[in-house]
Every structure is written in C-alpha cells, then in structure tokens.
Image 1 (cartoon, rainbow, N blue to C red):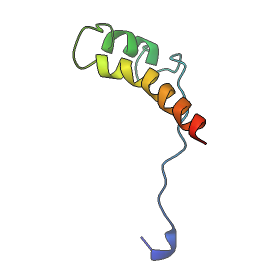
Image 2: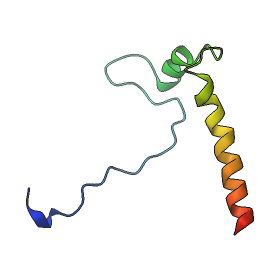
Image 3: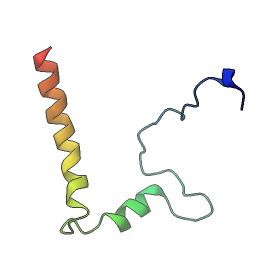
Length: 66
C-alpha cells in the first residue's frame, strides 16, 4: 500500500430495521435478534438492554450543559 493512499475508513453505519436478510439463509436480522436476545434474564443480555436508555440520558445531559 502506498503512503499516499489516505486513511482507511469503514463505511458509514446505519440503523437496521430487522427486515434485512442474512445472506445465504432464509433468515432476517429480526430472526437473529429474536433468537439471540430472547432471554433478558441472562447477564450477557441485560447490559445491552441498559445501554440504549443510558445513551439517551447521557445525550440529554450533554445537551443541557451546552
């Protein structure tokens, strides 16, 4: 790779709706979410559930400080 190639940047992210197909299967992202996150009692899933509201609270606090 040449030095003048510039930084390698990932493509921009976008929110998924869940209707996106999983390539090579008949399943969708929503099917995966339902399977992977179906038991909110497990210790590995609860932090994921918490992060959404926590991000909203942090964003609100930051906007009030400005």
